[in-house]
Each structure stands twice: as structure tokens, then as C-alpha cells.
Length: 362
Image (tube, rainbow, N blue to C red; front, top):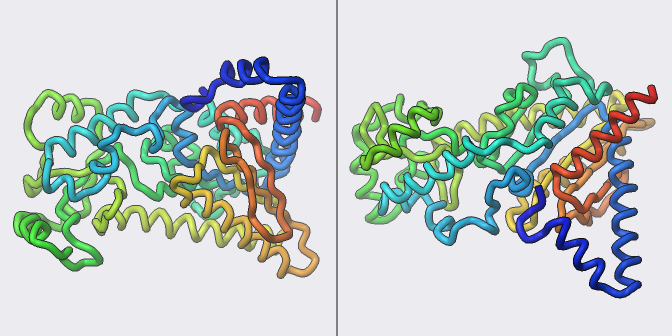
């Protein structure tokens, strides 16, 4: 599915409406994209390790809204302080998102990635017999998306680092008035924290999976969705703007630690055992660049490891797929980069088709 405002029809109209030089330029872009897709398929075919990094554009291919297209009240409702002022409106706003994420089917690209990984289509991924050891798994997903769609696929349940949490979980909001274990400053926070005296350790540790039955019960009621243990308002298990809730951060940090251990292991394997690593970045824009920056940081860190290892023939490549912001301007040496101007779902299907052709020739 094309991103909002950019469709195949738009491209055709602009090409036909231009002069001859414009047509030649567009045809050159098409040829360049095709070449880059072929190069990407070869890199993936020989990959021993695969890091998949995804941003809002990857969710947009399923028809979900990106930050750019979100309702005007999104920024206000993306601040946990709003829960203290308008608990009902805050919860209804986020519950609508939760329902939307549950109702939306993941696009074809998820299934393709699942087949590449656990399905064995990328046969050179260095699979270990110890499947319970996250470090030995040859792929990982690092995402800023909160739609929880990767968890629908067996390949990624234990190899997922969701840096902003999941909107399909809710938890007690007792922690929003604290930062690093200390009360946040201000009269409003003082009032909020005074109401939280009934909260327990169970409140802090428990998350609720938002099942269809729970969502139905909430939607049919005008009551505030409250914690079972202390009767205080619930919040989505999502890291928001100005969010200092240690209860949300704890789970995210646990995922980060597992991911970072995997990343360090893979960088060492590439450098010392001459392995090939691919960083596949999908739909990561420049508005919230955290995931793009992670892709580039892993690229540079791995290249540095390779350079320091005498005689190393290992490799690392960043493949960036984005319809508008596919350029890679990382400075350095000892790595490869491939830019593909396309939606992620479309590019993955084309790459997968080439990978199938390669397998049939073997």
C-alpha cells in the first residue's frame, strides 16, 4: 500500500505531464531502484545475521496512521499529564488506537520477513540449535512502532525490542507522577501522587493484555478504566512525550538490554568469524529519527570491529527502504549501503521474488 499522498497513479501522472527530459530522469530513477533491489536481494541471500529496524512508515503500509497524519489532538494526548486532567478523554483516545491496531491486518511484508527468518528462506542465517537463547538467534527487530504487529509472528516474539512499548497493553498509571523514583515537581503532580497511596507493587508490575472482550466491556461503559488492585486510572503501556513512568520504562529497558547483548554478540561474530550482517531499515523517517540513528550506529560499530580485526573478511550492509527519505549520508569506510525509494511492503515483495528466483536456480 502506498503512503498517504503518494501513489503509483500520482507517479504516472507526473511522468506523462512532464517534458522529455523529465521522462528520462524518471526512467533513470526506476532503473536505479531496480538495480538496488537486486543488490539488496544478494546481500540478504548471503546474510548470516539480520537486524530489522522499523519506523512509522512500516505500519503505514498496513493502513495505520503515521505521526504526520495523526489527529491534531495526538500531541496533547501523547503526554501522560493529560491523564491527570481528562482521564476519560485520554483513555478513550488511546483505546481507539488500541482497537484500530487490533483490527488492522499486518501487510504482506511481515509474512515475508517471517518466512525469511524462522521460515528458513534466508538459508545462510546462522541458526543455532539453542532456540531458547536470544543471543544465538540470527535476527532481531528494533522498532519504534507500538501496534504490536510483529508479535503476531512466531519469528519475532522473543527477538523484539519495541523502544516505545505496546498500545495493546494497559497498566496502572500510579507511576506517571514520579521520575527516577522521586516525585515530579508541581502542585498538579503533588495532588496526583496523593491519590496514588493505595497503589501496590502488584499495580506496578502488572500489565493487562487488551483482549476483544476487555475492549468491548470498556467501550460499552462510561466508567474510567481502572486498575483491578487499587482502582486508579489505567494508561497504555506506551512511552509518551515527557513520560517518566518507571513502570513503563522497566519493560522497555529489559528489552533494550536483551537487544544490546544480541547486538554486541553479532558484532563480535562478524569480526572474528567473518560473518555477513545486514541491517534492513524499513519506513524510518526523519521526523523522529531514533531508529534511523540506531541503524547507522550499528553499521558504524560493526564496521569498526571489522577494521580492528586483522584479516577479517566479514561484512556489514545497511539497506534503507523509504519512499521519501532513502538517502544514506553516513561517513566512514568498511561498510556497504543500499538505498531503495519505495514503500517497505512493495520493496520486500520485489526482493522476495528475486530471492525465490535465486533458490530455484540452485
